Length: 557
RNA sequence: GCGCCAGUAGCUCAGUGGAUAGAGCGCUACCCUGCGGAGGUAGAGGUCAGAGGUUCGAAUCCUCUCUGGCGUACCA
Image (cartoon, rainbow, N blue to C red; front, side, top):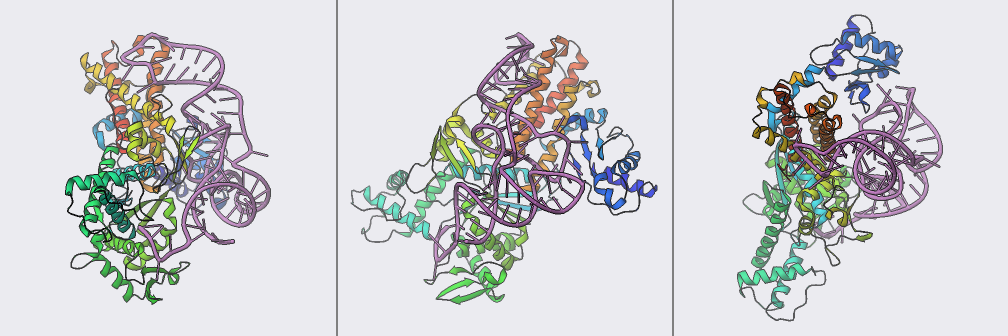
């Protein structure tokens, strides 16, 4: 559409009705008000200054070159200088057939041109069950991945398992203490350990699986194998939580593997930094001299006791993502409490792989939980933990995902557990899924009654509410492109509501008119078949939206 | 202190520098009794936190102030 306007503008310059001026990027808007057409351009307003002409005269000159054709009708000019474009009716009608033909590929685009994108999300420490906040990260990351795939990227989903480092040690110590308690030893958990009840359950599982083979002196550190098995048990739990939530990963990437093998990524990354002069030894520790790279301060990479920091792992990990695995685009989805880490990781990634620009860290603000009026704090250490499993148990994965997706990642959100539990129309997820089920129901009934949608002629569809529904479907490709460009999945959720609204309005319009011939299924075979084409296309589009959000598209409810 | 993110209707929140700032819930009045009512239409409700600035045009960009959240570790 933008190209159309640009071409017309250049033609106007050639024809001499506009002076020869440089064109800015031609932006096309979707007007809020349907009276302003399907698309609008404010290009005349932007050109007014450099062309030294009144905007309306420019609009006139451009629209003279915009002839009505297969795609658009004659453009309209509106003060103070808009050009309003309306899709041709025949074009809108023919799009119904295209949607049906494309099916599950409908609204795909080639923005990514086959580039490889990696989305890493959730990646919570395997030291406890996932909580509600992790669910937000899962919904955002998973939907972003699906949207990027729809936009033409080759996408991999990855979970980074923090199985090295201090927290994993503390986890192992806690587990060991709980394990010993299973054998009636009076051993306390460490001061900074994990007090949650789930650690007791984990210890019971460990005892059941391994009997007493890890029982050593109470003062001994836990066996390395106990730690491995413990983390594995925890990861299995996390994996099953995410599966319940509807999220599958392509890869679970071990932090420890960065330090293992013949040629560890960690060694390679650090020697790269060293040879580029980005490392310095000081106070017995090894520092990344990030202050030379625009950061406020240097950061410790290897502690004075020789153990690498979390930051060191992250540098090696991103070195691996870019240098070894060659991703073109990497998105890390993190909770906002990690935002202090973003800038230095980007700097380090640039220094170690020259890819700082290809790394995008998407922060989501933390979730505040409410039970009615009461605020529930999220805390892994003591206090009330609402796990993601509990949430899914209460409201189902679809409702949970949808609520998380409905809010911009950058906004702090309130999740009212009491409200989300309600199975009523206060919950917009039912509104959308219900629309899909109604569409399915119409098609099912049509098949039972022997209607043949394949024979429908879409040119028979002329009612405003019919064409409005198609117009709404056509927006999906723009929404996918928007999500894939801005990394803001909430647009998809809002679009889902709007598409469902269009369908409900379409469906209701027949009822309001009270004429049995105005339903989808009527005695008029030709018209019925045409409307069934529309219904099939709508089901295709709505199903696609639900699929991108990782939600079920029910045939019945 | 410094830095990051927010502040939009009673509540929860959308809003790519464009036309009269929107949705859901709640409230009010209607429509429809259905191919699935978990529906539709309309109305009331706004100092877009505040003050300056840029622009033909600002909720949107810039500066300052206020409020809230988070960060500012040889934790992750």
